[in-house]
Amino acid sequence: MKTRWLSLALVAASFSPLTVQAQQAIVPAQSEVAFTSRQMGVPVEGRFKRFSAQVAFDPTKLAASKIAFTVDTGSADISREANAELPKSEWFNVAQFPQASFTSSSIKRLDANRFEVAGKLSIKGLSSDVVMPVTLTQTGATTVASGAFPIKRLSFRIGEKEWADTSMVADEVQVKFRIALTGVKL
Image (cartoon, rainbow, N blue to C red; front, side, top):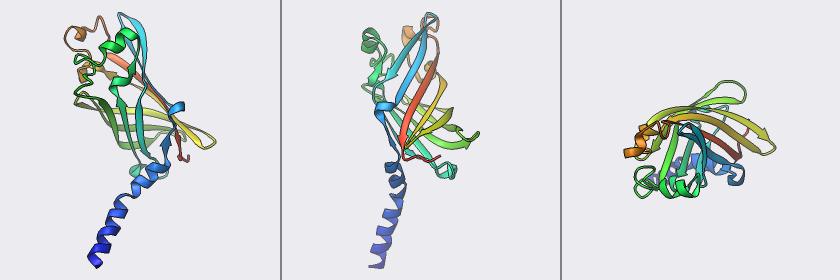
């Protein structure tokens, strides 16, 4: 009987971080994940329509804080023509890799509202370490995390074969985010 109660207590304890995450929820209508690439030198703006986040953030306990983010690659939206191409194997290969993800490994405070979030970004089965600056602003019960960071698309095999030519589509892509959250206290 003691073993059974101990097992139940351990299971309950293992779910305690999920309780924190459930209290910190994304507000989709106020959130955005966008990107800017350059095609033949001209900036091209796009965004992802579907994404989710699991956040357990406490600015007083950064070592215990975690952020996980998932983007549905098939929801990329640039233009009708580009939207038809992006799911194909040369670009996001949505059939095999329907999601891109980021999982934090550490969070460092820079000042009162600015942080550096380090972690692994995974796209098309390839992972890379990234560090992204994040600025937090709070209005009432909503906290907005915003920032931008560059990635090299060819490091993730985004734009293969003839699209690997960087004179057509630049290698660097700027990823921008604005994520509204509830339950985060600064």
